[in-house]
Image (cartoon, rainbow, N blue to C red; front, side, top):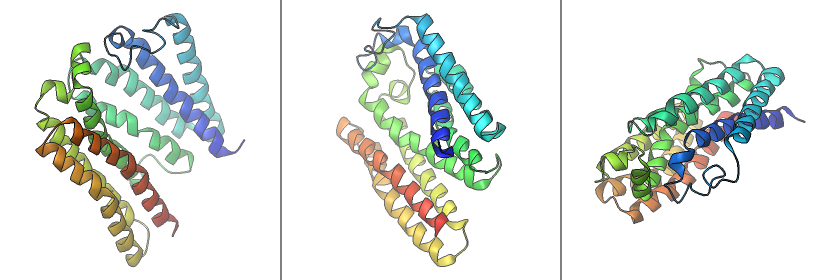
Amino acid sequence: MTEMAWLLLGTGMVAASAGAANQIWERAIDCHMPRTAVRPLPDKRMNVFAAAIYTAFLGIVGTAILYFVFDAKPAIAGVTTWLLYVLVYTPMKTRTSFNTTVGAIAGALPVMIGYTAAGGGHIDATGWLLFGILAAWQYPHFMAIAWLYRRQYAAAGFCMSTTVDPSGKSAGWQSIAGSFAILACGLALCMIPEGVVGGIIASIAVASVCYPMLRASLHFFASPDDLMARKLLRSSLLVLPAILIVVTIRSLA
């Protein structure tokens, strides 16, 4: 099995463990939302003990793979991701809309698992700019989801920007801020490798692929409704892989 396969397996197991732990924590709340009521625990297809064993197995084995196949750096990044997602982000979801920021950090930290496994350091600018892209991307992406499911979130007792501010203006400006942050991180990444011409071309490409999501964010802020939210969601799904392809090509050129 190649190192890439081991990396994907270890990272995937840690991420799956965090997701499973989240579902154990929120099993009662999930009963109140149609989109989550069919999960194994609220639907009674699995008991809590079995879920806990499954969660522990995935987390322990995934972390062990990252540590023994690579070294302590990716393993530390994985454990930090798990702790932040499960013990900080999850309980915050019913207490403050600031949970989105913590969730964005937890959701972006796996980038550092891959970066450090490839030989990068915890303080390298490149790794943190990649982290910045993924963290910032989660704002327009999740704000669109939070709007579309705002009534379900409110009924379940989740504290999201769209439940705290039903007008959608808070979700809108956060989407705009996230879109600009993605653009800034992408442009900075384009400038790190040597070559002015390559940096300029890559920067133009980054600006081009970010434009649809920025435009959708502006439209969502101006007119927050389901149609605009769906357009923002679709654009976010296209922008992330596109910008990562651009910066990857730039680093290899």
